[in-house]
Every structure is written in structure tokens, then in C-alpha cells.
Amino acid sequence: GRIMRVAPPDQRTGIGKFFETPSRREVYDYSYDGVMRSFEASLERLGVDRIDILFVHDVDIFTHGSKEASDARIAEFMSSGYTLLEQEALQSFLPLCQKRGIGIVLGGPYNSGVLATGPKPGAFYNYSEAPKEILDRVARIEAVCKHHNVRLIEAALQFPLQHPSVMSVIPGGQRPSEVESNRALLDTKIPAALWADLKQEGLMRADAPTA
Image (cartoon, rainbow, N blue to C red):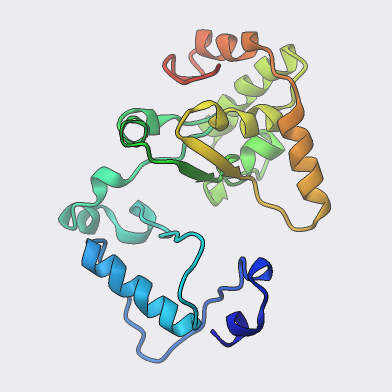
């Protein structure tokens, strides 16, 4: 809050940090009242009366565990990421967003690494070392990309943006120069035949939007 009060509005993004607190007890309450209490308390701590956007992080199986998720009735809102490697979100989550006009800011378009690095030994998949079956599948996807003279990382970044509910993606970056390189990845022209071949090979869901 003290930092927020002295920082200009255009420099406040990403100021938030985690601090260890004594006897800290996490409470997961995704009801309207619970979210609003958390939001209003955050505004008070930050010393501001508004924020541009509110993200609720880690509403997923990794945070809550399957039983707790089921008990709290939030499992229906959980979904795997929507990436070139996995499209389970097309089953119910993304259609629901599209029906209700909800825009998605999609993080992790590379499944935490393997879709950027390719299927090399030690590549990361969802924050762990990628198992052989994932490496094999990525290798097949990459082979199709190479056939069309497209880099795997280019296809991975552009793919989710073709869904009408995905407003933006967060590829990540550690230095300003990576903003330009990410932009270049988005500027690459990808032929429609690449997506068609991935579907033909069973490497992408047939109902995934690709145009």
C-alpha cells in the first residue's frame, strides 16, 4: 500500500508481493460476498479506491485438491489450460465463457516450457519435467510445424488467440527485449493447412477454432 500511494498509476502493474505473516491461515471463499470482502480489504491495504483488473489466482486442482474442490463446488469452473498441446477447455469452460460474453486472459501458452523449447530432454510441462508421452506428442506437433516452415513456439503462441473468448495471452518474459520477440512471434503468418494437418493427425481437437 505504501508503494502504491507514491507510484504513478502507469507504474503500479505487478507491484504486488507475497509476505510471510505469523499464523497466516488461507481461506478460499469464491462466493460473491467472499470475493467482495477480499477485494475491499485489498483496496484498504493498498490505499487506493480502484484497480484496473482483479485476478483470482490458482483456482485449480493444484491449489485445492480434488476432494476440497468437489466439496466447495468449484470443480466445474476448473479447466486445463487451452494450448496447442491440450484443449480440454473446449469441453465446457470456453463454450460457457463464449455464451456469457466472458473474455479470457490466458496464461501459460507454452505449458510452462515444452511448447517453447520443443521436446528436448529436461523440458518442462506444467511445472514438472515432461514425461515421455508428452515429449512424443510435442515432437509430432513440431514435425507438422516444420513441414509448414513454422516454428513450434510461433504456433503455440498464436493458437489460443484464435478462440473468440481469448482476449490476450501471457507468454512471460524477463527483459524488455522479449516484448519485441514475442510480438514477432505473433506477426508470423501461419498457413491454415498447418492447423488442418494437426487436426487430421489427431493432434488437435477438430472443434478448435483455427480461423
